[in-house]
Length: 500
Image 1 (cartoon, rainbow, N blue to C red):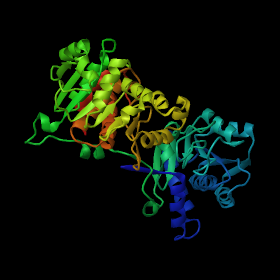
Image 2: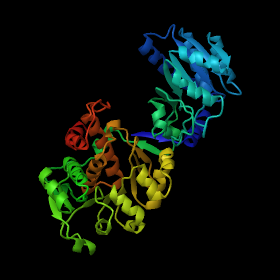
Image 3: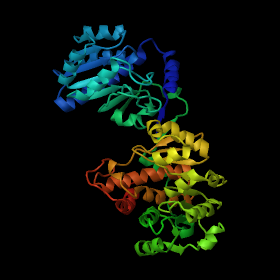
Image 4: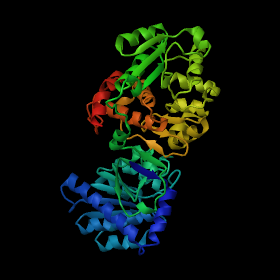
């Protein structure tokens, strides 16, 4: 499992470690690791370090010192290193080391900085470190924008300047790096968008912080973690032991959501799927997924909050394509009044936003909103949710008393008093209609198999993203180049599970 921390947690660990080491040891470790990564990148892009051109953007803090010391190491290997000194002060030890190694330093000048960046094989962003927050002041903001014009690779030192290390917020100009070399531990803002989109690939340099780090604020499951958590049938298993999931989805207007959510559950390994809806979705589900047991809901029974006609289930999926009228509200009340775990998605979330009393239940509840749906649940503008995804998913979990899976470019899973889990799989091709319905079916199948809401949501997001990558032609790690449809993701689930 990859764990990540806030800037305050990192600083506390650094102070505890520095008290046991000679002065300057941590900066030396960081600079050595940074220089090694940059040398590897230069060797890969130019074939050698000697003769390459490196531009440093050095701020006034420790990140500027890290960049200057790393630049000195590259200069001693024959690179032509030039630094732009952008801060009101400069790390004097790093500056002396750079000059002694043959590097050059220049006071900030926009024209000169643009010239250096345009001609560099590698640009090192050492403007602002983990202590930075809010919009970049000048000239840092201008320099961050100029990095977009750089001809070579852009490497951020510890965190891209302009990205909040603790939350991933970006308020204004920010460096968009090809790679971020981070020290000691992952920062939460490197894993969560919009910060993650600015970080590029993230390389961790170990400087010895491990024993001094507290419990993490953020975590990301690996494939091995997910493989260990997923349920596997044993010799004694039958369909009931493997988990019976009920799905209340679809309507005469939105029939596809029903087919897709049932497909996600079937392909994810549910022992049995019981599907309940109006006549047309039931007809289509019977035709596409004959494995499912279907029930045309009797409106009179639903209005009495009774789902006895459906049969016994161990978890429910509620909402995809359900509609938001009075009959849909009655279905939602009936499902949420049961004593089994319920996953609520799509139209179900709209119903909850209108009637929060539906959430008054003792059994576990998993909510799977996108940013717009979460904004309605919390009563805040969508832009605020998108700018502060980590903050708002935590707030939702606490305020709504549920496990919350916030969908998006980085999917987050939050539960009160637990680290927020960041999903690392997926592809931009997932941004197409119906893929969220498939995700609901997967998570519902895992809930019915006995997983907690926190684990079911986290594993479902991972498997869903992995299946999408495979469907897009990128294999387990690539993003692929082919457009995909939601049903492609459902069909690829068995291959994704085999990989795990």
